[in-house]
Length: 143
Figure 1 (cartoon, rainbow, N blue to C red):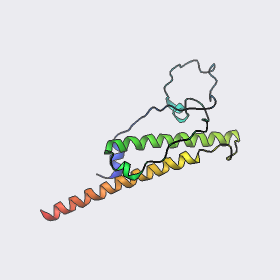
Figure 2: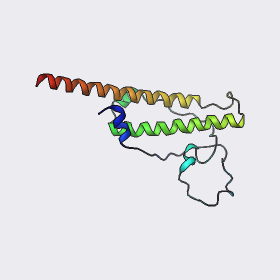
Figure 3: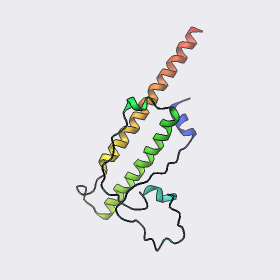
Figure 4: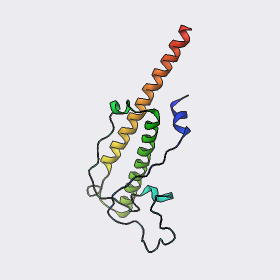
């Protein structure tokens, strides 16, 4: 079974809490739903607000840390990072739409950490796949 087949078998949805600077929607205009869960397009915004406050975030995951994780944990982490990448892309487009200068608003650091972590997950899973195929080849030649 290939890497992509294993990734496409299950999906993972995560709920994250974010801090944001200003509301995206007028609260009086959204009287139909009072649910605070992020559904639909609201998943692409942090707490329903268009741009978050500039906050310091942690570092990217190291490959050595990822090697200690199970396949299911890596799979879940992949989808959390994918969702984060989509949120950051939405924020970048919102900043462009509002005409905010890149020097004032940028989430490039968070995006870079997300991309590095995703690349390292792929690398670790590829290592595991190569080892698995190597063991299968050795087993078939010894039989």
